[in-house]
Image (tube, rainbow, N blue to C red; front, side, top):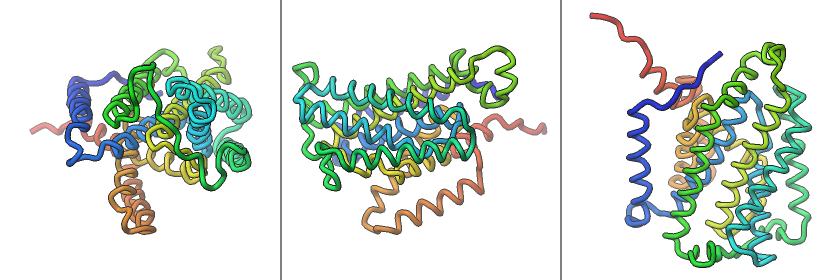
Length: 319
């Protein structure tokens, strides 16, 4: 069984420097566009939440966009249609995604491999068509002009500065939670189930309960990312719940390193950055992303972060 390890001092230092740089983003909008960084943070949380299920739980899901997109729509419903404050919108979107994850998990965890993936894909397509037909979603036009509102009655989220710090806070909190889960006794049992399920079952662990809990946790964090995205861009659309997004998050996890805690965030940065900076090339973005994916898979199958860890821990030959 592969044992997860706590962060090394250099990793903690790197994260501290990264946090300082992220805090500085709103003050240098001429260098880095804050709205782009907010999207990147949302997708990084989404990718790491998905990797929690795939990389550490060993469960391949092709329907994670259902949690991301449904949370975006529910947040829009609560904030725009019901007129409630944004904190309740974020909470409602996250809880709805968790509930949906419980339904998906209860139906899917009894299968493995491609069968589990196809069940999640089929369920996600059902969710897609439900949101296509619901009257408040705006169908192909999406739910637009979602108000950001005022957080706790005094923080005006119409300011990109305030919105950025909220997204940064929630994204860091979500990533910290993922790190804690992976390095907790629960996380070690999940890895044991992934490595040898019959052995874990023979030791008396309730395998289905662990799998379902992991599914719900992954769905809830994915929903939090979708809820934040809806407030940042003030829109929830069918692309948020489409199976293409489920494919993108699989790509992010594989590129960054699905067996690492924060590796998928690197994959998300790469994919979102390519989509943003190569947007002028239209369909060529997909081709470039595909080529990079092929190079990464052929060069380092454990992903970018996995390859870096392998180089770091490789024993050095003596003189």
